[in-house]
Image 1 (cartoon, rainbow, N blue to C red):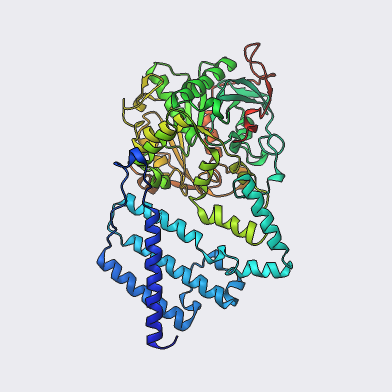
Image 2: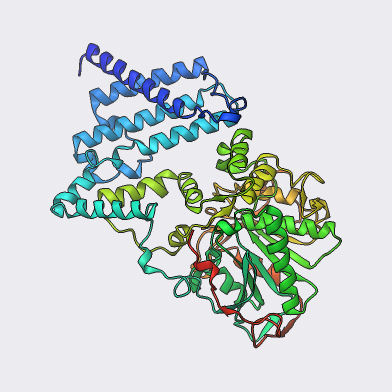
Length: 570
C-alpha cells in the first residue's frame, strides 16, 4: 500500500473501524430498563466534541495511519513501550507487530476522543472508564492467534501449555474467579494470620483477637485495630516480616484486632447502625474493660477508618471519650473525591442497590472483588488471563494476592446505607446531617489527637481525599503521605527499606494536599517508625505485660487466634 490511493482507502477503512468501535462502547453506557426506575434512569445524551480538538485528532490519526502502512510498526514506536508487547517475539512476528501497533494507535485515538468530548467531568470519567475496559479486553496479547509469546510456548512444550491453560480455565470457572496466586502455598493460621494470640470476645458480627506480648512491659493504654469489613483482617498480619500487628506488639502495645464474621443469610438484614453499635463501639468498650483502662488507642484502615470515625462521633454526641487517640489509614471521611469508584456512584445506581438489598440480602464478596480487580484491568485481570490460560502458567505464591482472593460478603442494608450516606450524599462531614445509633454526628466534636496516613498512588482513596480528613477533624493532627498504593503503601515494614514518606512538622494544614506537600520533607523508607513514635506518646506509662489473655471469667480465651470467623468463606 505505497500509493496515495491505497493509503487513503486504508485510512478510510480504519476510520470506519474507529467509529464502529466508539459506537459500540457508547452503547455499553446505556442503562437497562429498570422498571420503577425508568423515569429516573435515562439513556446518555448524544456526545458532542470540541471541533478543534477533533480536527487535530483526525489529522494525527491519518498521519500515524499513513506512517504505519508505509513505514511499518517501528514508525509508531513510543518512548514508553507497552510492556504487554515489549518481548522480542512481538517485534519479530510481522502479524503481531502490526496488530500491536494498530491497537496502540486506536487506543490513543479513543482516549483522544474522550479528551475532546464536551461533557462534565463525571460523564467524561465514566466514558473513559468504559473505554479503558474495552481497550484492555481487546488487546492483541489476550488472543492466542495474535500473541507470539503464547504461540512460542505452545511449540516449545508441544502443546502442553495449551492443555494446562484449558485446565486452569476450567478450574477458575468452577471457583468463579481468576486465580492470581498459587493458593496451595498459604494456609490461614499457619503462614498468614500467624501471630500468636487468642479470641477473647465474640458476638454475631465479630471476634476480638488479643495478641501475645513480645515485650516484658506494655503501655498502659491498650491498642485496638479496626480493619475494613469488606476484607479479612489479616492484611494487617500477612507474614511476620510484613505484619503491622506484629510490629505494634513489638513496640510494646497490648494489641487487639477486630476479626469480622463473613456474613451469611443470617446477617442479611444487618445495618450500618448494627455494625457501629454492635461491633466498633462494643470492641472499644470490651478492650477497655479487659485492660482495665479508662481510655484506649484505636486505628481504622480504609472502611474500618470510616466506621471508627462514626463510632467516635457517636461517643462524642453521648459525652463519652474512651478513645485517647485515633489513627486513620487510607480512609475516606470527606467523600467529595472518592477516586475511581465515583464512576459507579449516582442516584440511579444507589437507588437500584437500595431496591435490590436495602431491606435485606447480601452483597456478594466475589462481586466486590471483581469490581476492584477491574479498576486495574491490565494488572489484575488480563495479565492473569494471558498467563493462566494462553501460556498455561501457575502464578507465583504471593501472600497479598492470596488475601485479595479471600472474599467477604456484606449485608445488603449496611452496603446500601454506606453508598447513600457516604459516597453519594457525603453526610459525615456535614454537622447533624447523619444520624447513627440514634445520635446526630458532628466531627467537630471529635477532638482527640489523630494520625492520618494517605498513599500517593492510591486509586481507591486518593491522596487528596485522605488529606481532606485533616480539614474536618479539629483535634491535634499529624498527616503523613507514603509512596505506592492503597495496600502496598500501608504494608511497608521498616526492615524492607522500601519507598519513602513525606512529613511536615510545622503543624500547618493548608486547604489542599499539594499546598501541604510544598513544605513537606521526603524521608526514605517506611512511615511505620514515625507512626510508632506518635502512638507511643499517647499510650501512657509502661506496665508489666499481662501473663494471660483476656481478663478473669468475663473475658476468657475462647480459642486460639486467628479464630473461626476469619476461616469462613464467602
